[in-house]
Length: 333
Ligand code: SF4
Ligand code: MG
Image 1 (cartoon, protein in one colour):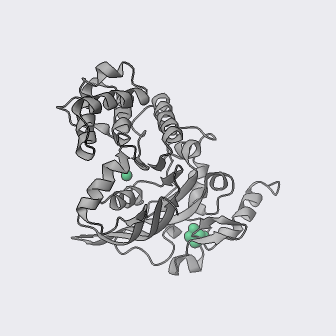
Image 2 (tube, helix red, strand yellow):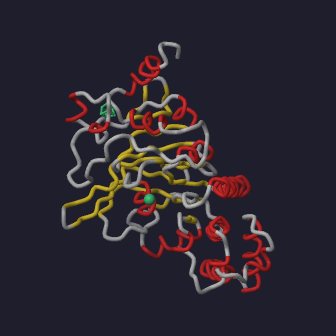
Image 3 (tube, helix red, strand yellow):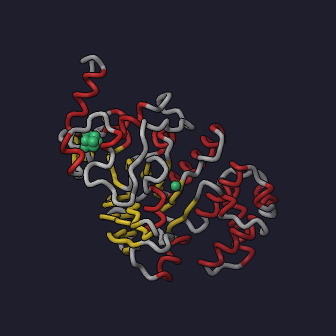
């Protein structure tokens, strides 16, 4: 059994202008100790999905299931969710300052977090806080637990967040654009910290990013989202070398260099459709250079591609992707 099994997750928000369909029919598994990347432009539904799974969306209509260690988190009791979040699911976000309290030392915040879930003495929690800070590579951790969030640089602050998210040894870490605000060198260091903690503790990671360079470095499995729907889902190696969706193709074409981190997606011409009354056909049709009649009327299902049972694509032309690549390579592929 996978650590997390998400099936047919749908999330919508009633607004004055109509119902926003933020996530439509999302399914994926996260295996213990592995990294799943959810990639897509902003507004594609990647953050909303994981926030919903963690019970953090307010005022949303939600259906589907998200089994974490056997417990369905969708519709779970708020008390159960609170226990799971923090103790078994750690979360880190792009901006640590929004999650760290400015008026308390980072040590105090980690100690409180530990003591909210575990019966340990203050001294033991304090020692654990220092250990955690040193584990994420913060020098002079024993002293630095007495510092306030603003006394840390952006990269060091993100390390503090990771330490806090790992404080209770969670089975799953949800990282939403954890390195987006950092410069490339610091970004690589923070990703290294995450990877080494994963190796050491067997933590599974859901990494939300718009950066394919980060995906290339970190992911085992990739979900590509667009306008609330999954366009493609595949192991990293086949996604990068044999993608089967025109949207993924466009994203990859905008990558400057293979495996380079910090590469922002240059938008594919056009913009995503409205999520209020979304079109009935393929959501990518308005921007797809291969679109044909059927694409406009019927949305393609997320199906396995013919030559790879681990690879799924929601495109009527998924099985022609290899031919398209060959044509572009002048038949030499
Ligand atoms: Fe393009 Fe049609 Fe495939 Fe959608 S289904 S990605 S419009 S070819
Ligand atoms: Mg987001």
